[in-house]
Image (cartoon, rainbow, N blue to C red; front, side):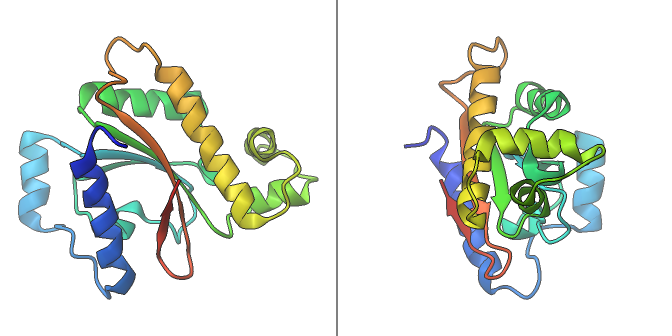
Length: 185
């Protein structure tokens, strides 16, 4: 299934803890802040997710400072700047799991479904439209958008000289903003 099962299970169990938690058990102490300043960051996963303020990967996976390299953009679309950030974290920080995390009730996906978007946001909705086509169901559209992001990442990093396909998992998931559960695709 996955090359990095231990990291996948860490994410899965972190989400399980989050669903019933009232506080984040991740280490955000002064000691970890000092340690990451002195010794650098060593995140175990990269999460490309939406900018939505209700979607906080460190909380969703019960992680602390330095554990997840988070890349945020409305609609969790994968454009060149996101590819550059993923490349940096995978090649230079050694992250072996790359996740595209969409979420229910995504404003960017909803705007794409509704249509008529103008301005800079149209760059994002055009990308999402290519992923979801004419899909009108919110959850299905979010899932299609995530699957598209995973596909973009897989194609972009196929044969990459610093990121081994045999050692790196590229996965997708959808976060339910109401109940906190992550649905793995």
